[in-house]
Length: 164
Image (cartoon, rainbow, N blue to C red; front, top):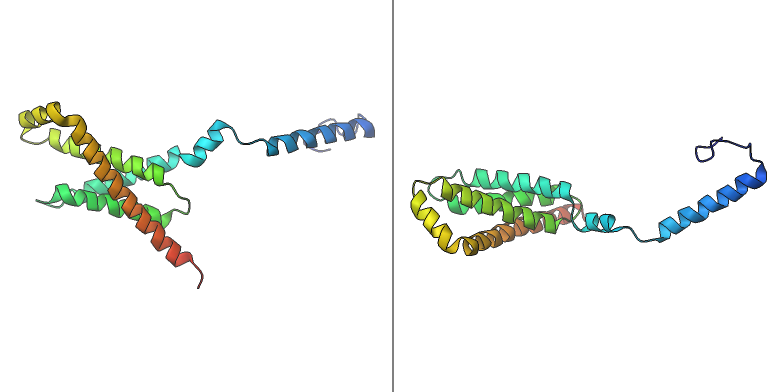
């Protein structure tokens, strides 16, 4: 008795063979049909990898921002280092996830730093005048830093895993 046919051999040989050929043709059609929209979207963008990249990017920005006096610059070095580690560790490419995570984490980190500074009235006025352009520039820098770090991490991984 198989899992697909719970009645076993009760229908006789003719019924079982007809069901078997119908199941085989249905499975063959399912394999030939291209994946659905959800399956295609998962090959392009993985939410799980995005969340991992976002956590690593935020951690890299935080650690890089701990450097006194130049923390606003070294936070992007920390972002690149975190995504470099992700590139070394991951076997599957996820450039879209890393770029989006780097951009979002950078904007969040810089805006949080600006809004918690001692110059809050000046910061609010600055953000009111050119907040969107500023956020887009920071997002671009964050995405670029994240992608560069990830690219060089993947390159290092490819160099280590390539046979001589």
